[in-house]
Structure formats: C-alpha cells, structure tokens
Length: 285
Figure (cartoon, one colour):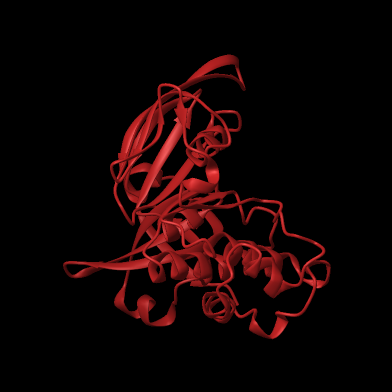
C-alpha cells in the first residue's frame, strides 16, 4: 500500500502552480497517469522515485520514504524506473547491463527469456532496435526486484506494432512479478489495455480517479459518421455484445451482433459507420 500526500511548487503550462496530490495506491494495482503536458505527471513520478523532494509524506508498506526532512535515497526505495530515452549503459552488452544492477544470472536469464532478448545477450545497445532497447530498459528496471515500477511514457517513440508488443510485455511482467506499476501515457487504447485505474492531472491537481472505462469512455451523438478505429475489447453483457473501439484519442462502446463477433478479433483495424442509430462495423483488410 502506498499512502501519499505531497505538495510542490513548479512551473506548469499556465505558469507557476502547486502540485498537490493525496491518494492511496493498493499493492499490485496498475495505474495510468494522464493529463496535458505540464500538468505535473513526470514530477510526480520523480518525487515517488526520490529524484526530487517535496513537502508532505510518502509511506510505502509502513516504511517512510518521505516525511518532514527525511527523503529516502532512490536506491533504497525498492523501485524500478523506465525512461522514454532508454538510459542504457552503451559500453556494456545486453547481459552486462542487467548484471551491473544485480549479480543474479538466473533472474537476468529469466527476464531476457520473457522479453525474447536471450539470443541478443552479447550484443551492444547501439546494435539494438528501439523496441529491443526499451525491452532491455524494462528488464534492467526489474533486476533490482522492485515492488514499484514507474514508467514515464516508455513507448511513445515506437511504431504502433512495436508499441503493442511492448504493452503485452509490460502487462505480462507486471503480473509475473506481482508489481505495483504506474505508467504515464496519453494513448487511450494503451491505458485501457494496461491499467486497472486511471489518474488524470490538471495543473497539478488530481481531477479524475477511476477505472479506464469510467475515465476515458465517451459516447457520441446520433450524427452519421464513418471512420477507422481499432478494436480494443469485446464484452458480453446479458444477451448482447459490446465492442470497445479506439477512435483517435477517444474510446467508444458499440453494440454488435453475434455474427460480427465471430468475424472480429481484438486488435483488428475496423471501419465504424452509422446510418441513423445503427452503427455498422466492417473489418479493414
């Protein structure tokens, strides 16, 4: 359990503002942190990591990380931090990047196996693709056996296919190691796929806190429309099927037929169109 109540003055998108957050995070929750640029998301992660100080308190499983003048050093906080820019040791091989953190060959081999990097263990980071570098960065963050994993927009620079692959890796590792994870993301489909809870910051304040569906899902009016989307999920509610689709930066629910369910699979690119009040979904080949 993470119990925090922190305050810090900083410069935001609208000038000077106070970051002020009070909340509890349960063990093994997957939190998505969203909000406009300059709202305080990265600063919040850095305060949790001990890379910046703040007023208030952070208590993790009855251990004090921050209170009054006490600010526990980052290396004593049992956390892993994955950055957008990888932050790898360029003069070390894939394997040595992991063993530098912890001399645990069994754990290193397990992580490389789970992320399909085992065959690349002797390669240098400069010879890896962006996706491989980010997977290595994720593995390295887990070598310290953290309880808390912080991810600051780790997938934003990747192409859609690689981004989806790494989403699967992150979710698998979160579950495999029983982590409490917090990811900064602006991508609705990514948030829906990964998170069990969504926090939205605006000018340093927590303005929304709920499930991905409660926070992100929006419905549109009855206008005629036709556009491309991505199929995120299909749920059966009583006797009907409901498709969750990502349309740009928005999620929508659409009732579909049993025959349409048989033709579709999660991740399909689809075309959503409507005539009056009856949406029609066609798979994009």
